[in-house]
Length: 534
Image (cartoon, rainbow, N blue to C red; front, side, top):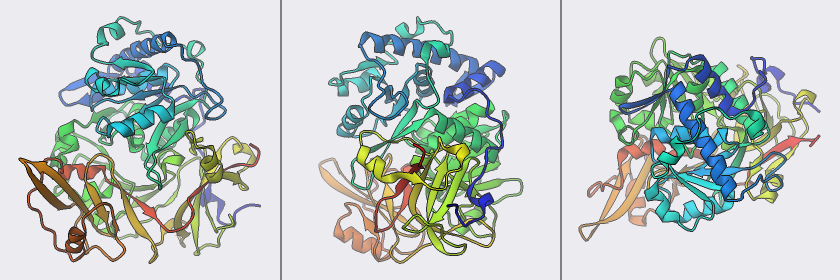
């Protein structure tokens, strides 16, 4: 059985011949060999060349392997799938050390598990336990809060001298033994039940995604790519590897940049950023243009037409993207133009996109169906949740023989194929929006066109309530999803009355950059499809 939809829309092939290397960090190593003195990362007034970052990551990789061996940890094969699942957690503030650590973990033969230092201690403890991490790379200060962690604890500051004493020579594949089906990273999502779920992404998934996004975005070594997303969110994978694959410069956000709010435009211009990826919520806050940006990438939320019109400029590409964490960051993309409808476009190269009914049958063109995504980017499954993995990863009856090693995922978002053979999202009365709080400690409510944050803190012995409108738009409609906001504030926000006693330091407007809106409809959880051959 094959889909009735045009094959050139659902299935995009990889435009590049696959080289022998299929490990994510090898893409960085190629640039370290080809352009060693080029700037790899800029962080405030500090920077690292490709050669310098390579040497630092190699030293950390060797130190990690030695510390893991001293702890008596071995490879874990049976728990999480056919590939190896050696996991090392990293919990670091924004810094150059974060990129050294990410690369060092991969080079050591492990998968990295990023944890935001601002997470509550109980969430950090849960992720460390659930992932089965063998080691934790952090700072001495942060390590003190997790003394009960049974694995090796590497403190990049306190252990810096010991790490620097390691050889800077690159570990060989024979020494490490990493294979394409081994895990590359695990990112924890909030999940519909509130319990964090670890999405396991293999090297082959990440490697293909990075190659595919390069073909779509066409970033070159002369570009400067802004990296603003926390490493615990998959947007960071897009940002980091857009730069590293091309030999470009990654402009890493300092805490001040990450919380700059409307002033971010000026900072992007000061750093000559040419590639900027963000959620529309953040873009809507920027009151000034960033004229150096030539490629603007949207994702994570519905992008309003008026936002495209406001940011469109001659010579600037605006690209809209769509895809869940389970398909390695994104699965579709669309070129956006002022005055044209906003769509989610076509499949990313190497991905397969189908529109199916509830019985996994293709729907005719023009009719609404649920998106199903397959191909090289679909992840392995969820950490420690075999039943949910089996429920959501179900047989793919459409997989061509050449891609039997790949998976397919069904997503609970409803779209239709329009006359231009692009995917058009459809909104229904029963469709609501929910917000996933990423960095901030505030509760929120989300409507079709606006986001309201509520925070209550004790300051100088008095309680301060703050209600902040983060995205200007229509009055919040009936059926708005509220998360812990008191009823009296719900009434005021629902009536379009936004009052702020005083905005406490705990609620910063710049933190709205961390909001991602995800669609949610009543009904069963999304399914993930795997090939019948497996």
